[in-house]
Amino acid sequence: RVLVGNLIGEGHVNYVLMYNMLTGIRIAVSRTQAKIKRPLTDDDFTARHKFSFDIIGNELTPSAKYDFKFKDYAPWVFRELREDNFHLDPADYLLSLTAQYILSELGSPGKSGSFFYFSRDYRFIIKTIRHAEHKFLRSILKRYYAHVRANPHTLLSRFYGLHRVKLPRGNKIHFVIMNNLFPAHKDIHESYDLKGSTVGRLYPEDRARENPRAVLKDLNWIERGKELAFGPEKRALLTEQLRRDAEFLKELRVMDYSLLVGIHNMQRGNRDNVRRNTLRVFSPPDVHVPPQPHAHWHIHRRRAATSATSEQPHVVRRAMHDASLNANASLKSVGDGLLPEEDTGDRQHLLFSQDEGGLRATDEQNEPLDTVYYLGVIDILTPYGVVKRFEHLWKGMSADRHKISPVPPAEYASRFFAFMRAIMRGGEGGARFKAE
Ligand code: ATP
Ligand code: CA
Ligand code: CA
Image (tube, rainbow, N blue to C red; front, side, top):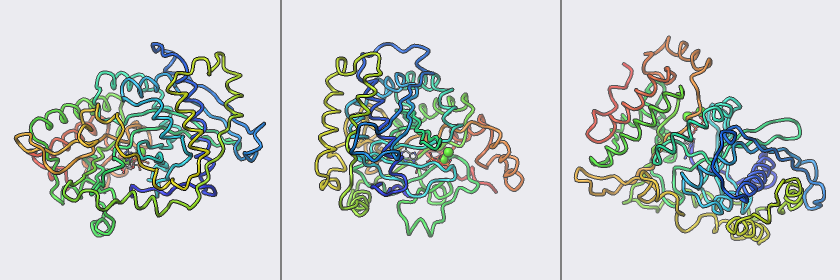
């Protein structure tokens, strides 16, 4: 799987889905944002807000195609996570996602069938998830929230929103919005998805050489003799956070998660400009941005118990204003305006993304080296359910049962943690995790 997406223009099979997702996010998030913040209650964790979009009264949007329903889950919880824990600027969040209706879709979806979409500035990822994953996230939301509160520097995926789009034919698409671990402005020269499992965890090396953007796996890491080059200070911090995160995942009884590692080599710098160039290449000459569906906004405002305008804080008004200005502007500059000049804000608050949006390698005296790592634990919503147990038995017949990917949660977590420790500088290396 490569880390570059195709821009979704009009006529793309998922254009309507994108339109619906972004419209839903824009309206739902600004509705919550417009209200005065209050302490969370227990009900906030199970809350869901329904929105019904239709095109009545808006002659600019073709009918039927854009009729859809939207659900916003636990909006107050995610608002608090975004603002207080993940340090996102509320206006920025909306602008990045919805100022222009542009997303790029990641090439081939994995075996889970999920689709990935990048926000136009590459800061956010929308991942479609299965209903089971959606239900699971809702069921653990309170514990996730508590973990993030207690561990402000957690390496776990940062979830910013959980939503559902329902199309007129009844298809329901669940999705989360999360942080893109990789920065928009730095080339990632190598990336690895590491589980601590070695069975089937090799990306063919010949193909890897042809495609430097491929995401490699545990065996590639081991065979290339890689290490996470951190001095004692960062090693200790990273180890402790990984220990706590793995412990939490064990308690949730999930498995199959990975440590995603992106490596930026400062000597090589950004001369490849991989993502930027690709975006330009794929950028259609005239990207169409749908008109802002003011009609919807008014409908929902009327239904709302409180008037949105009277309480709308300054930031959100600004975001909404900018959003409509940008949407109406000529989009000739889309290719150029896609990426902001600097990474804005949130990463510098977080211990493990404080150096250039990542974590810089250090020597044994804790002095910086010329590598920046981008690290995070992803794909954390797979409970050890019936399917996995079955897969475990089946796969276990042909390979060492302790080296394969689907092992029970406690074993998965301890192996995961042990592997990550082993591959840090000074560790024993990952070789002992190989199946004979
Ligand atoms: P599967 O269940 O088959 O492993 P999935 O559809 O659940 O796949 P993930 O494992 O979540 O997908 O992610 C697949 C790949 O997408 C990762 O290996 C990584 O390359 C990329 N990716 C996922 N989440 C992020 C993120 N937050 N930041 C950057 N890249 C990501
Ligand atoms: Ca995965
Ligand atoms: Ca998965």
